[in-house]
Each structure stands twice: as structure tokens, then as C-alpha cells.
Amino acid sequence: MRTIAFALLVVVAPLAFAIDAGTAFDDPELQARYEEIISEVRCLQCQNESLKDSNAFLATDLRREIRRLLSEGKSNAEIYDFLVQRYGEFALYRPRMSGKTLLLWLAPLLLLGAGAVVVIRVVRDRMAMPLEADGEVETDDERQVRVTDRP
Amino acid sequence: MMLRYLLPIAAFAVLIPVFLIGLNRDPSKIPSPYLNKAAPAFELPSLEDPEVTVSSSDYAGEFALVNAWATWCVGCRHEHEVLLTLAERNDVPIYGLNWRDSRADALQWLDQLGNPYVASAYDADGKVGIDWGVYMAPETFLVGPDGTVLHKHLGPLTLEIWERDFVPKINAVRGD
Image 1 (cartoon, rainbow over the protein chains, first blue to last red):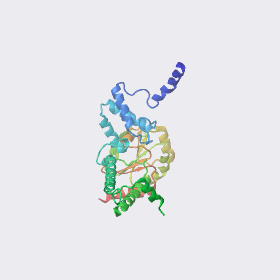
Image 2 (cartoon, one colour; image 1 turned 135 degrees about the vertical axis):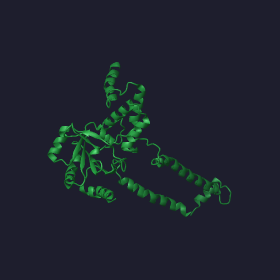
Image 3 (cartoon, chains in turn purple, orange; image 1 turned 90 degrees about the vertical axis):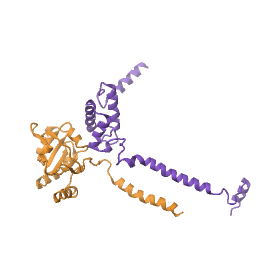
Image 4 (spheres, one colour; image 1 turned 180 degrees about the vertical axis):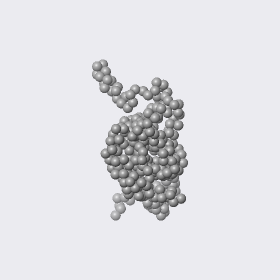
């Protein structure tokens, strides 16, 4: 059992370092911020991967730039600004709230609101309807007669 | 009560063009955030001679095409003939940004296929490419005399694209 576990570890451990050899920063706080940023940024060369997942050379270059900015003491917001200035809002998986992206952010709320309006109207219409035309409740037997006697 | 039928039809009529436009747009083509803004400045060693620098001030006050290319880029080979034709016409000087390439390969390419560039900057580590937002070579930027990016084309250039997208932008500025 131990041997198997050890063999598995030997196989799996290098995969953890497939993208960057080792950790980028000695400071665990910087390393955490680095990993957070690179998982929030799209690799432009292979759009469905984050910088963290991508082996494309542009992703390698952008990770290098992010490491440089982090070690220069730049804040996360400044680093996102750096990327958006060059590649546009599309580079971020979570576009920031701005005039251009306002509709994108508000769309779910607007759709929910539109749905709520429809639901309220339907429910109100139904409540306004009388249960039966003459106000009397049909018994099961009466209903049975009405349904089976239908021509 | 008519509203009950008209509303879904109206919503459908609005959605169809939205989807049609969406389907015909290529999501891999990201519009440049530099459009109609100042092009980033750069200063790099020249491809031919590491001692010589090529910089954005070389084309200050005039139109310039900045063409990001590399020898590993298939589309660049496709458009090379077009760049040579444009260079021959001498409309706008073309500056090469050799992006993440090997110097020897790039020089051999220019030697064999012809050199359309008035100057080539050698961006070995891709840093200037990142500054310009380059992500898929070839990319061609049209920079105006005041240093703003007037147009950016992604992918291989053709003479049709040149006439359609670039020439009107140049004429608009020249006409002012």
C-alpha cells in the first residue's frame, strides 16, 4: 500500500509544477495573490484557458509580467489595469463594473425583474378569475358525468 | 389582449438580429483598446543590428504601419507578398515588430522572401508585443501622424482589406 502511494506521488507531484517551475515567490502572501490573479486572467492565445492553466507562450510572457509587477509592489487593481489597458476588458474573466460593462452586470437582475413582472401578472389574473362560472364547486361525481357525457 | 401575442413576436424579432450579428462575429478577434488612442511608445534593438535602436519616434509626425510578425507564424507568410506590394507603392512606411522570434530565422526570412520594412524592431521576450496588446500574429496597426492608432487588423493582410479598411482612414486624416 505504501509503495503504491509513494509511486502515485512520484507520478503526480511533477504535474503540479507543469506550468511554472516551483513557486514564484517566497512570500506566501505574494504567491497567493499571484495565483489569484493568474486564475482571473484569460489567456488571449487560447481563450478558454486562464493564464494559470495555459502553456501558450503569451501566457508565459504575461505571467512573467505579472510576477514583475507584483515584485515591484503593484496592487492587484493596478495589475488588472495593466492588462485591460493592453488587451481590453475581455482579458478578465470577471469584467469590472464600468459604463461599458454595466449592462452585462445588470442583465441578470433585469431579466429576473422581467420574469417577476410576468409571474405577478399571471398570478394576479388567475386570482381575479372565479373558481367556477356560477361560484359553485363541482363535486367529483358531477365532474365525472360532465367529462364522460361529452359528445 | 393582443399584447399577449405581439410581445413574444416583438421579442423574437429583436433577438434574431442580435443572434445573427453574434453568430457572424469571430470571438477570437478582440478589438484593440488602443483604437483612436495614443499608440504605445517603444524602443528596441533593430533586427539587423543589435547596436541600432528602432523606436516609435522614428515615425513621429507621419503615417506608419506597425506589423507584428514572426517566422513561426503561418499567416505572416501569407501576407508577406502583400506587405512587399505595399512597400513598393511607398504609401505608408512599414515598421516590423519581430515578435518572439530567433534573430537568425527572422533575418533569413527577410533575406529569402524580401524585406518590406523600413526598419525592424527585435522583440525577443515579447514585452513590446504585450504593450501593444499583440496576441495573434500577424497584427497590423495603422498609426496616424499624431501617434494615434487609426486601425488595427488581426490576421493576414490582403490588398482588398488594405483598400477597404486602411485607405479610407488615411484619406480621412489627410483630408482634414
